[in-house]
Amino acid sequence: MSRHKLDLQRLATLKAASLHPEAEQKAQERLDNLTKPPGSLGVMESIVKQLAAISGEVCPSVDPAVVLLFAGDHGITEEGVSPYPDSRSWPTCHPVAQDPEATQL
Image (cartoon, rainbow, N blue to C red; front, side):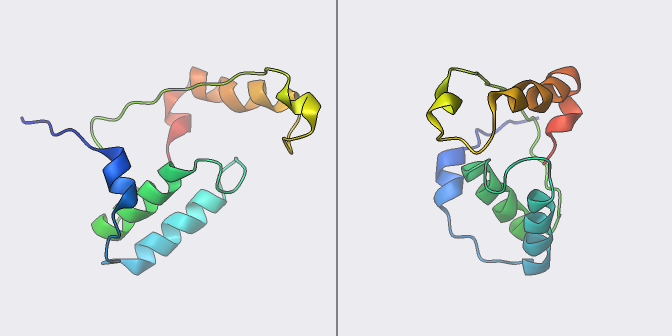
């Protein structure tokens, strides 16, 4: 079995033709209904939509997949730049740490 390196930066910049525009739209709707601020996954949301458009799958998968979870409460919320209090970090991250399936887009 050969494994190919997936260049996420390059993939994010590709302008894939919407071979399956309905899957792309449904993927966007799904992303918008996840427990997260809209657009908070940045480039990853664009990648999910592109993979949906290419594959025709609303929940496209990449195998093997790796999840890196970074979180921190560093006082920035005290500056008023975040719409969410620091008390949201633990309830948001804990389920992911306990159950990796919680990370599915």
